[in-house]
Image 1 (cartoon, rainbow, N blue to C red):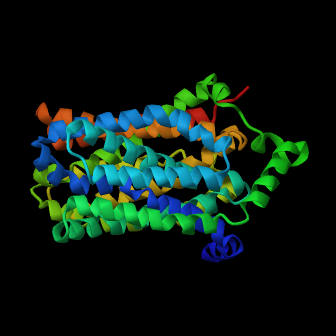
Image 2 (spheres, rainbow, N blue to C red; image 1 turned 45 degrees about the horizontal axis):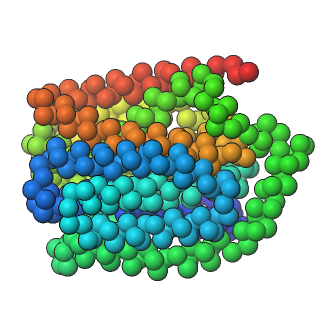
Image 3 (cartoon, helix red, strand yellow; image 1 turned 180 degrees about the horizontal axis):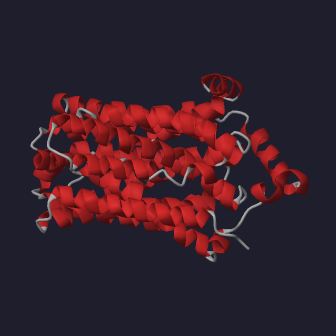
Length: 407
């Protein structure tokens, strides 16, 4: 398996590196990074957890609305220009976050970070892997998605130390400088893209090589099929649940009688499990197709949530993180490849911009929903069981949807 990856990476080092770097650079707009700054931001603006969660939700929802348009631009714009604009937007977002002086400005900063970081940086990297590597789509997405895991494993801890040494504003301003310095590297990794894109257009316009897989449904056609709506719960569940778990590590610790450091200090378990699953599932997707690999991907997440309810033993944080990482790895690789398999490559940017909008929306819904249930007095274990049940229902719908005949 690793030999297959080695040969593939050796044949396409720059473009795969592009996907990896874009996934990594999405980190300043991801919940696991922004959440580290929560206590300082709450103290500055005198926000309780509910108010901070609502501000985060407002910025994220605004990003979800905009990305249905902004994400589709990748279908009509040169990838080099699109990527440059996205990363410049992320630089500005980090500068705005490091300079916030009001709650209104904070909402705008969250919107920009989520739009250009979590949304468009991820979108540019993963969509490009799915579009230009049709024969090895699973491996391409898997290698790029390791950038997410590297960011999760390294940057929150680095941010904690940076905040302690220099302060939270200076940390985000420094992040802006880091992203700006990465832009020339990203453009170098895209060297030769003109020929790559010309080859894609030739395949898309060739009825023999294109076929049904490489042609493509439009976003309107996708929305006219029942299949999309049966897939919706499976699209919503992972982002909603995992974002909530990363947003409320202190609540997990409080409910189980652990320290917050014990929860956040074991994020590495999640990252390792994610990377291993990404690598394994990439080969499986190429060999068996995403339609066969994806359906059970939410069941490990359900198992992880249930494991938290068994007892308050400290070791249970490991199966929780491990199972969540397995679902995350399958989600990154399998679901990203699934859209290209179901709807083709021609309009993949527009289609994935919509699915990304759903993902961003659900990532806003998760913290708000869990926060509301906690304030209403629902026990954390009961919340976990409810979310696990939702994963099972979504899995049943996913199995049915992918076996349903299509017109």
